[in-house]
Image 1 (tube, helix red, strand yellow):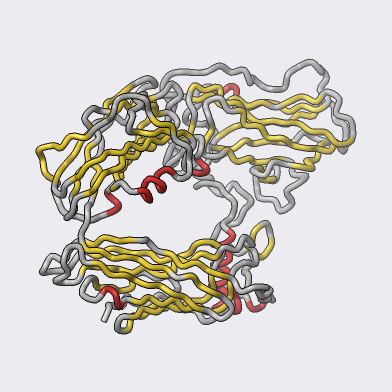
Image 2 (cartoon, rainbow, N blue to C red):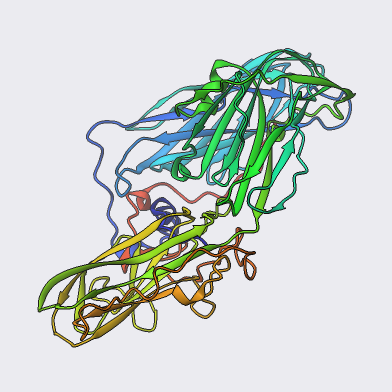
Length: 552
């Protein structure tokens, strides 16, 4: 399991659920202060949703449409809005076009009467949350091209809601990306041809298409086509982990036809490759789609020849308007290793008073390590503090624990620290952990240790690291030999060959096993304090999820 900070909003939801049952009444939780100005919440949903036509007999295919509300407050502790609110769905524009019913709607109480759907709920949490899901299907007799709108409004005492609108259309293109049968086990330097193929399995033509490639740090695509643009550093928190290419193709792509690249792309495993992802997707071209794929990043246009598409003789296999089949993902794993070499330090004259030191590890490569699918942490740096020293400042990703590794409420002054190694470590990274300490007692040759390891202390080996001798270093205060190094083999060289052992997590990462001092999401305490519940405890009554209701 990935170690991360506790999801405060999830904790508040848990606490609020207990509060409505009266379980937190004895704790004396009071209501949050009222807003100085009525907040404005934004309702949202997709701009347009395409439906597969009604088959004429039997059950039609339904599409789930999720509507959301956004509370823009940046105060995660007190920004939740208390009180009931109502969201209304005007379905009158769908007459003869689509049939609607409510699907899974969480804690909302949702009902449809005639051409109006109404959901009531208690509280609007900080950030984006779901209001309701509508299951929409084409009406019997509805013609291809018919359209109608769902209009969404909201109301609450002491708050304002912006409106939302979703256009429903029967029929449309359905671009279906075919999977690639690339080799999944490769060696660094191996290159494979990728002849990407997609079909239009819809009911109407697509006017222009965009091919988007997203590939992780250890994958290289050497071609640079003139109708493609390229960038590095996308995907938010994994900005160093991915590159992206977007290729535009003009023309009309007819329903029932299959298209493939006129020449294959080269998918090459870099020398630092290890656990990699290659994602390829196709969308109908439009300014909105281009903006969505670019995600605000800067792109460079290729200078090579133009890449084109050929129509194949085979036909699309099915008519299935399904937005989830536009993309395929290909995992690739290189037979490679990474050498995580710990380093400590030596403070030869650590007199009483404040001092500091930086410990950690270096990745001597050759591979980078990125658990991109699971997002799990790669491991931990286990630091024991030398005798006579007391930690006064610690890195944010380090949890103070007891000597035995058990949770400890007081984080400073701990005898031992477990420091999370995130899900990405680059091939030449120096993972540095600065500590500030106070020397309360001068102890000659006081020695601590710095170990980079798996989360499980009973199974410390890192599956990708065959060089075990440099995973531990010493941290020495007032050593007898002031010129000696306490780094414990930080110069450990790179190592080739195949990865020793197997992975224990979704990407080769072990689950954490609860090594952190933070509470689980289902708990209501964080570091010994009762989680903030805002004013949720005072709002409304507890509702069970309703049964779906059919339109009309």
